Length: 220
Image (cartoon, rainbow, N blue to C red):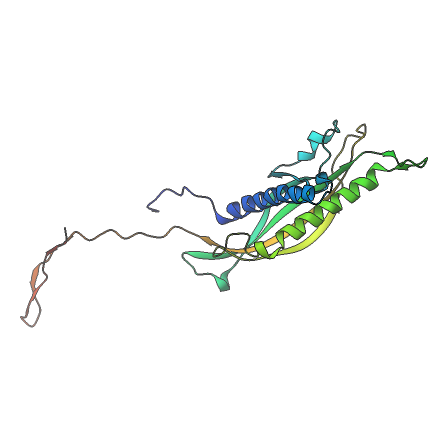
C-alpha cells in the first residue's frame, strides 16, 4: 500500500497555471509599457482564463470591453519511457492549448464605407496570437520560470476556428488555438523506509556443529 496521502498537484497542472499567470502578468506589463510609449494600452490587453469551455459567451451581448480572451487548458500528455525510470520519474510531453478569441463590431470607416466586424475580429485575434507567442517564446521564459521541472517548451501549431455565436449578436468573434508542447518531469510516490529501532537475534547451531549468534541491537 502507498504509505502517504497523494495530496499534491501533478506538474502538468502547475505548468498550465504557470502559462496562464505568465500571460496575465506580461499583458499587464505590456500595457504599462504602451502607456509609457504614448500608445493605446488596449492593444496589449488580454483577458486570461483557464479550463473554460466557452469564456467568450460573456462578450456576446455587450460591447464594453472587446479585448481578446485567452483560455489556457490541458489537452493531452504522452510519456517517453526512454528518458524516464520505472519507479519514480516519468518524462512527460504535455500539450497545453491556448485558445485566443478576438472580437469586433462593424463600424463606419469615415469615408462612406464601413469596417467589417468579422475582418476586424480576425485582426484582433492575430494580435492576440502575436502577443501570446512572443511572450511564451521570450528568452525569459525558456523554462517557463520552472527550471529543473521543465525541459523544453515549443509551439506545435496555430489553428484558427470559429467560436459558436448567437446569430443575433452584433459582436463578431474569430478564434485561434496555439498548441504549446512542454517537456517536463512527473514524479510518483516512493516507498519510505522506517527507522530501525530494534534488531533481535538468536543462537543457532549449523550442521557442522558451529555455533552462530544472531545478536540483538537497540537503536533507540
